[in-house]
Structure formats: structure tokens, C-alpha cells
Image (cartoon, rainbow, N blue to C red):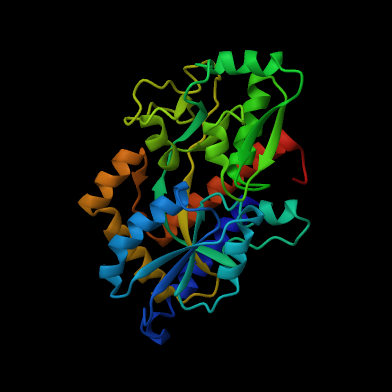
Length: 324
């Protein structure tokens, strides 16, 4: 299905499920579990815990984050997709759907279908992705990173949270743009510790997990992949300013529910998420992490995810070729 067809299907699904409001059961009736396919301290984890704490009082039930790292995020997404479609089990992961589709394909497993097996009920935030090295590295720019990598006898290593994930794609995309060989190392956890320790040459990661480590001096940011500089790190140039014309990537974390979740439940979650994103305490916390809270209704969310997934597919084909 092409991106236009995906959008039409997804918007039709939103309209159908919204029409089911009257027939839906009261929600929520028990604590809400948000499954994260990454370790504690990563961007989705930090964002979900911050928003979950604000959403709980609005929903009248606690929002509990559960970390289920491994397999490129597919442990968490599989568990969400097969959960009862009543809104009490959710998933927080990238809006591109990488951990829902490509991570499964990379493991030789049939992918879940966006908007069918899992559907986004709201955008949790827009983040800014950073090119990172250890804090005491002699590498201080993208040009220097390329020179260092080319001088090594073997391909330099970079991490991701799993095969097929956005850090995997963006790390490979950066190496291709800078013209050096790189070795992808998937991690279940501990990638940041190995980067800080100098056992990895570089990483491309979201700002929520990285900014506190940069502030402490344990990591250094060489560039931000946004089209504009990051207010939390005003001294860090964009990749375009550092010489990579058109090299832009803005990620984001979405809140996903099982595909057959009633429209009334999706709408309740979307409204609570939007209200939580407006909370001054949430916004203050997000400012320190270098991420932006987002408020979008269900239809706006579907349109964004459809476009973002298509862009991710295009980058993936450019870097890895078709079929990845």
C-alpha cells in the first residue's frame, strides 16, 4: 500500500472507530501500562514517564511504564498488538513505526501493520537527534569524525537499540553521508555507557536521553540533525551548517494502541495526552531535555505518522537498498 493509500485507510479507520463512541465501555477501569521496547533512561522512557505522571490524574488511573528491551523494540510492540484492545496496554515508540515494521523484517518475521495491528493515538513529543561522541574525544566536528573514521584500520562502531531502529538507520545514513565505513552494534541496553567509555566511535541518538549527559560533560554533541539549532545546546551546529546539505531528521515518540481499540478510548487517551503536554511542569522538564511537547488530534496524528513512515522508508532504501 502506498503512502496515499495508507493515509486513506488510516483516516477511514479513525472515522469508523470514532463512530463507536456510544457503544464503548467506560475507560479506564484499571491502571494503564505503557510498554517501552528500550531500557530506562532512553528517550521514549523519559518522555513516557514524564507524560504518564501528568496523564494519570487526568484519567483517574495511574499510568505505569514497563521496560521490555530487546529485539529492536518488537517485544514491546508485539505485546501491545496482542493485548486486549481496550486502551489499558499501550506502547511508546518512534512515530516512524520502525520498531513495528522494519525491526520485524530484519529478524525475518512478518511485520505488524501500521494502523491495523497498532494505531497511533497521539504524538508524545518531537525530539532532536544528535551526533554524539564521548566527552573527552579529540573529535570535535563532523569533519573530524570523518577523518578519524577513515584513518582507522577497521570500520568504526556505532550503536542502536536494535536492528531496524531509527538509531541504526540514522547512524548508517550519517556514515554514508560523511564517506566512511561503520559497523552497526545493536544493544539491548548499555549503549550510552559504552559510548561514554570510548568503546564506540559515535552514536546518533535522541536529545531526551543525551542532553543531561552532554551537560555533565560525559558526552559531546557534534551536530544536531534538525533544520534549526537546539535551544538547550545553542553552540551545537546543525548538520547542514556543518556541511551536510539536506541532512535533516526530526524524530518523535508516539503513543500506540492495539489497532481495534474503540474510537472513544483513543479520543480519551489523545485528549489526556494533549492536556498533559500543556502542563507547565511537563514543559519545564521537556525544556531541559531538548524536546518539544506536541498536541495533535487523531486525524493530525495519522497524517503525520503516514508521512514520517514514508520518509523513513525512502531513507532506508537509499542507505540499505530495497527490501530492508
